[in-house]
Each structure stands twice: as structure tokens, then as C-alpha cells.
Image (cartoon, rainbow, N blue to C red; front, side, top):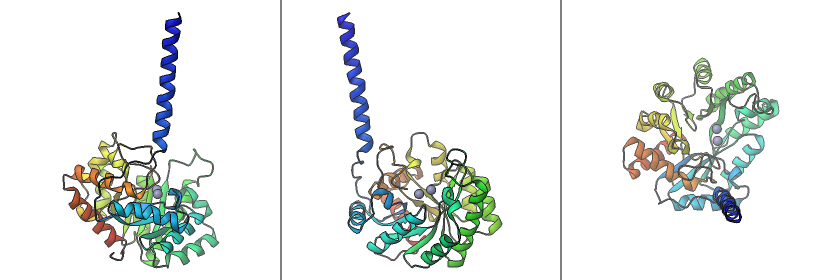
Length: 300
Ligand SMILES: [Zn+2]
Ligand SMILES: [Zn+2]
């Protein structure tokens, strides 16, 4: 009896310490990757990564530069976040902004927000209108999320804005492939369309490629269960592919669930190189060149 009780107690202790270890690991940042020069993080959220003052932004970008990620595009979700993105781009020459109301926040696109966004996108440090698009996952799951109809209306406004200012349109698409592609075709797409965190299958990838859109891949392409996404990443021509962190989310394999930052980008760039059967350095050059061309970034 006492022995079996003792065994139980040991087993219980082990479960507790495993859980604690897992919890600790989840908070722990991934180790630095081997540097891979020439990269640009095509989509991150500096404010959500803790970059809310000049020193914090500099620290994040110093860390990224040290492993070869020389420039980043920091992206807004709502109006408060848009002001953070503008500030980061102002504080550090390695940061550029993209501003818009995220589809889940589409109900906040009233006249004052439109006027402020129009003023922001005229700034030379704003290199894209985004992220906008459609999110059909959250309606019904979160009461705060805008309805699909409201999202569609806001998406059309952002498409028009991108065309008016002649800047790339950065798309967020969650479970809305068909509606999203139909609205883009109906409105007439701007010259440059970037499908951020591309998550479609080969067919959707093929349609986007044929339309001339740019497909940006995040850490999801390295996940163990992402065979379909890797198949999609294989068919994208060299001049239509980007890499992004979408930090602080979507940390690449094998650090999934741990905090993500721009310095983790080389993990995903290497995953793409492997998927496409090319050399890491060549892949990085292609990905970096595309970002600099698409966002018209100044050379550094
Ligand atoms: Zn997104
Ligand atoms: Zn994002």
C-alpha cells in the first residue's frame, strides 16, 4: 500500500514538474538562429512584441539585425496600433509601417478613422495599406468581431485607398478564400497585392500566382502538420514570394508556442529554402530582394 502510494506521489510530482517545464518553455524566447543576411521581415507587429518606446524598438531591431534581418514592416490592427506603427517607423530607420483596420475591427471604420488613415498612408514611411481583408473565423466566436458584411465593406474601402495612394495592399485572409478573391476581382486589385501569412492550398496559391499577387509565408509553413501549405510554397515563382514572422504569433518549428520576434525570421526562411530545394543564402537573397522591391524600401 505504502509503496503504491509512494509511486503515485512520484508520478504526480513528475507530472507537475513536466507541466511547469512546459510552461517555462512557452515563456522562453527561442535561441538565436545562425545568421542569414539579406532578409526583411515582411510583416510583424512591433508594439505587440513590446516595442512601444524608442529603446524597446531599437532593442528588437538590433537583435534582428544581428542575425541578418535588416528591415521590418510593422503592421497595425486598429487605430491605436496604427499610431504605434507610425511611431516605430519614426523612431528607427529600419522600421516601416503598414496601416489599416484589421477585418475583425472593421466596424471601427467611421469617418474620423478614414480621415486619419488617409493622412497616415500619405507618409513616406508607410509602405503598405494593411492588414485588411476578410476573417471568417472570428465572427460568431467573438462578439467584438465585425460581421462578414461589415468586413467586406471596409475591405472595399481599403482596396480603393491603396489604389488612390499607389501603395501595396496587404491582405489578411482567414477561411475566406473565395469571397476575398471575388471582392478583389470585382473592385479591381491594386498593382501590388500581398497575401500575408498565406494559408491556402495549392489551388488558391495557383490562382494568386496567376493574378500576379505576392505570397508571404509565416512560421506556419514550418509546422509539422503543414504539408499542404508546403506544397503551395513550392509552386510560387521566385519573384512572388516573401517571408514574415507575424510576431509575436506563429513562432516557427520547433519553437511553436514560444514568443516570436523578427530575429526568428531565419528559421522560416531556411524552412522555405528546404521546401523549395534551394540554398539558404540564395533563398534569403530572393526573399530580401522581393521585400525591398515590393515595399520600395530604401537600400541600407
Ligand atoms: Zn493577419
Ligand atoms: Zn499580422
